[in-house]
Image (cartoon, rainbow, N blue to C red; front, side, top):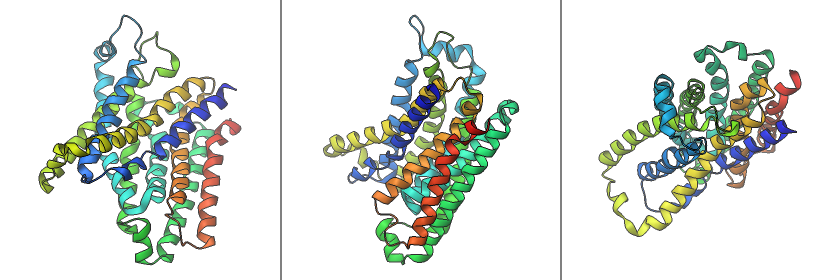
Length: 336
């Protein structure tokens, strides 16, 4: 029963993450770099910091655990900086491919590489059991099917129809950016792997990964802040931050996007606390999260009419890919 609860919690976090780009559509008259920067303050600094505080026992400071493990802290930040590149290109993949297809390709790549490379980089290759590898393979098959559906969509729709659903739709450029985003985003999982020592022995198991999560998102914030401020200077959009008449609306929706995005890793931490009895699912939990992110993002893509006008064959391939992803989420547990 605990395993079911853990999977449900991870699924809720995945649903929230997949919904995080919806509030961004409500932001008014800010350039991309300005609203990306502000939502990042909420997503990568404020909420991860508040989450990490839940792991601090009475009488301790959050920074006690970082001071006691400087090497793990620095590695987590370093891979967070690399993940930040994935975060930037991830946003661009949404721009060129839409919520559904962009997240599918980027998160699918991230799912497979994050699950495989984390044990390799941290030296825990014993975690790469046959059920885990089979689960990753099935996840990638599901992503491939959805990618094929996206290719069919690109061939079927006119440029006008594509632009109507996704303003800047560009399939070749989007695929390249999404693959790069997925590769670099896998560094988040590697950062969490190096950050495993960053917890107090007295912390509840469901909160233990949250201090490491904060260090990884801090690294990602650094990368994104440098790039966004560069874009502000390049495009002369510093005035966005001074437009106080938009603060109430834009800060509200940036904060909403930020907390929805962070919910995936908060849910991952809580969910893993309930998966402690299954070493296979603990290793595969990253892939489960990403697979569910893809599933829910495509649900949003359908709701936002990004697949409107596609033939029944294309929709059938899309649905088939989603079914494979859902199966992949619990397959390793059945195979162990």
